[in-house]
Image 1 (spheres, one colour):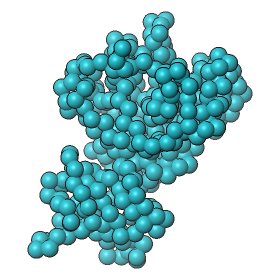
Image 2 (cartoon, one colour; image 1 turned 90 degrees about the vertical axis):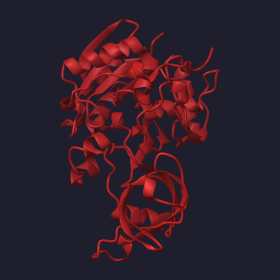
Image 3 (tube, helix red, strand yellow; image 1 turned 60 degrees about the horizontal axis):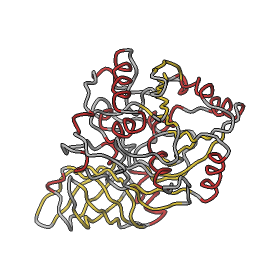
Image 4 (cartoon, one colour; image 1 turned 90 degrees about the horizontal axis):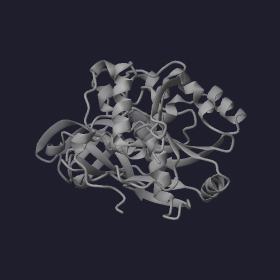
Amino acid sequence: MPESALMRVDLFDFDLPDERIALRPAEPRDSARLLVVDPNAENIRDYRVGDLPSFLQAGDALVFNDTKVIPAQLEGIRHREGAGGQQVSATLHMRIGANKWKAFAKPGKRIKEGDRIAFGHSGESCMIGSLDATVEEKGEAGEVTLAFDLSGPALDEAIASVGHIPLPPYIAAKRPEDERDRADYQTIYAREEGAVAAPTAGLHFTPALFEALDKAGIERHFVTLHVGAGTFLPVKADDTADHKMHLESGYVGAETAARLNAVKQRGGRIICVGTTSLRLIESATQDSGEIRAWSGATGIFITPGYRFKAVDMLMTNFHLPRSTLFMLVSAFSGLDTMRAAYDHAIQTGYRFYSYGDASLLFRKD
């Protein structure tokens, strides 16, 4: 049986009223709404994120993505011999070397290999406010490879100095990034720097919710998947088989893998917090169901027909129409179920996308 089936992308389309897009997170974070979707019981129920422990059992394990968002949105001036300077914008999305990043650049069509781009020159910055790069390679859809003059920790420091938090386009189109986003667009357990988009299901967790989960005997485990800007790219193909996923780098430690296998062996459930941790766990799981230590780049594309090997439940936010993430949740709980769940969410005022409300999905038998 194939892991995923060829499907028309328009099956994953739906109408979302503009006012359903959240521009700020709920306060406190765990007061956000939680739509509990169980396709096996054929029911959809309304709760709050703070109610999460009541749906879990002692011995279950939550898996979190501990990636940390970096200020990867860079603004600069392109220089080319015989041509004047031009303003460009670059969103870093995957590090490929000590001084190299893959990035999405605008205006992509005008940028050429060999161009020099000066990021962060504001006229009032000292050296730490200067960040220069050469366009080493140009790919499709505005993707470029940038080779920076700085390398390693010095490059990290410069990016942190001149960069901006890369808000998702559906928020950035409505308001600019501000200081609140530096805290709001980061999980409380973020540790490993490298993401350019937050693992947004994790934004709902608070110290109080962690304490409640501890009292309920729920384990917490951490993996790392550096979320790339490709997560926001729409699926432009007519069929899912023609869509190419952008790679994202990740890591599952040997100790984490062993502990998760032990959870499964004693009858506990694995609950992934976010599609990023699910994609990483499924990438690290053998056909036998054994989770192994894993590191590298994953481009796993999960659509209906995929056979899940390890994950029992998924907590995730509400996703874009025609997106790979809506396809993933449809694979997990069933397309008809998720279309009904999203219709319910839209009709009853749930807030969508990165700063929006959450859902807790049971895997369809």
